[in-house]
Image: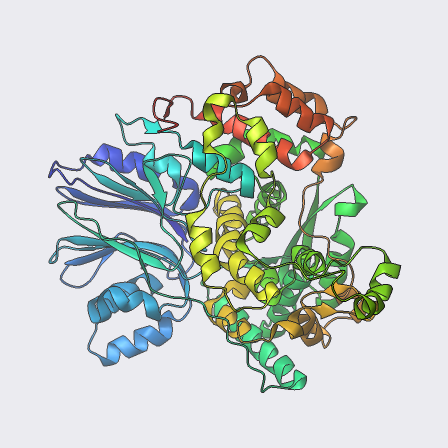
Length: 621
């Protein structure tokens, strides 16, 4: 797990060593264990290292034997030992025990298709001096980030936006359509970023650029398809899930340094800890964060799991003064990012890094096994289910008598985007000042292309697919990657393993989500059934809480942060007034719309920090 950066001077000018060092230095938190650069006149690679596998031998940039192929790599390859064995049989010689060198030889053997053989999380750049080109690639699910910037004279890439901002004599144009997407979704989806000149490489994509600047279109090398298998019985499914999860956790435990696990107390992290405890011959180190607000505090559940498996458990309580870290969060996320659970993720990462440099987490389980509350609400919305129990009980009789009274809603792209919107279109239009109102609604081309692939899928499967391809990489995995790497902590996600996701895509939707005994939609049913051999039904089937920040009480009219929020959003020096109507912001505050308030608070801080990097001359072109 590391930070990577690089420049290709397409005008044939030499790469400045100082600029390359500045870019890698901006990523020092990602790689506190070492750094390196390599320059070939107009091409340069930079690297910051967090040493997890082969600490002594895996220094980067790293080359093959004849130094014609070089790599800078961020991530971990979990099947590198199997690949290493196969490559040795084909005549390749290895000088280190690192997974990084495996990628170099895999590229020599299979070219650009080497990425299709990798099981892991990765973002890397390979310089091929013979072919005079650079290959960039990002892992299947988008666990590791990769940003790139193309200008008339150079092409640059990095693990974080702020490394690209170290390149001198550039002023980036603010992309207001991307900002509208942020208000819509609470993140900016790839390939867009907050800057027009900077893009994110999509998950499961690779691209190449020649030394003279010829750029290939990003190419998708892996495509997820849901193909339910109706031949298995429930007992077979339970056994299969148990085996797949155990294998994934085992693969993610490959390490030459101590490690632990995030333990929220929810089903997914509890599952990961259960498998770790069974696979290891020493107590698992677990780390939890809680809140004084009981509705947001899962510490009691985390303690039960820790006690059951005899883990070495550490926890902390997050206080309302946590907002003090907002400026630091904004600096590291690099662009507007509205998931407030970044704050507890920051604190649990900080807690874990005091003991270990690597952890496993339960991220991805909700998408893979239909566990989100949104799926339950989506199914409820589509079928017109009310929240009152008498409505659920009477609905079958009403449908029999008056079948046209409650026709099911259609799971269309428009309905889904309206359903998941954090700030809907009318509210966003009212927020933008008249000069900028034309950016709303911003097009979501990538979402539309992805949704077209779901035609024929059941409604919940549609939602799962969209989340796996958008919400998971652009929100959940981005949140965990940045918050953990701020502390030089590697976070591995065994439930987001490509083999787990491909397996989960074969589970019939009705086994994942269905009505429970009292008529309510419930998700993650098959996973919970599998875990009943490790946990009680009461523990597994309780109401889902989620890893959320208690901003509702903190931002409430009488909340601790209300004066600060009002001053930042409506004060005379608010950066928001350039683009947004103060009356519309005040209306949000009167409604106590804490989610949109948080989005605007983060955006205000981001605009403050980037005022010297942003050009406003082309914001609506």
